[in-house]
Amino acid sequence: MTKDKASILWELPFDLQREVLSYVKLEPVYEIDYSKYRKISYIQASSMKDRFFKVYHNCTSLLPIKKRLENHARSCHHKPILKRYFKTEFRFRKYAFYQELLNKMLDSGHWRERTMQQIVKDILFIYSKKREEAEYLDWFCNHLEAEESHREEMREAMMWDS
Image 1 (cartoon, helix red, strand yellow):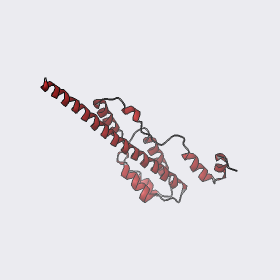
Image 2: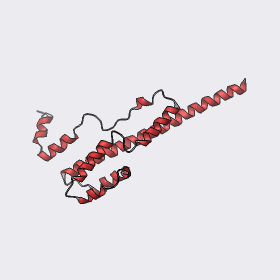
Image 3: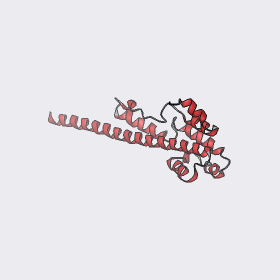
Image 4: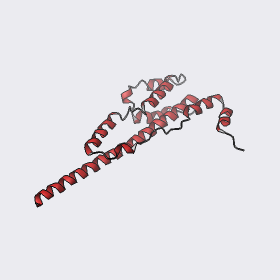
């Protein structure tokens, strides 16, 4: 006989219940919306590319997760090195900052650090998806530019022929 999810959850110790409930989500952490890149011109694509890179490190899906991580780090009283590490200015907290945090400073001994590890993994996942989107956007802009230049060359060739 299989147990339902609620009964399994209530059998866990309280600190694990809290950790599990804080990470139960029904929606994905970050999804790339490819539909916004359909039927647009080169000028629109390049302006979208500029906007994308302006908010690369502080987009609406990434900023709340970073804030939640910072709150966890500031309330981590058993490890003062984390508090000092998070005194780094927010504009300097990029991919390498979180990679180093995950590799060198967090261990899975305390429940708060395990929670912080999961949050950092979410942040790194979002960065990888954003890198994938940036590569696609760069390819798409190059593709549209090549199409436009090809059309211009064909137009010039027709003018010379006539």
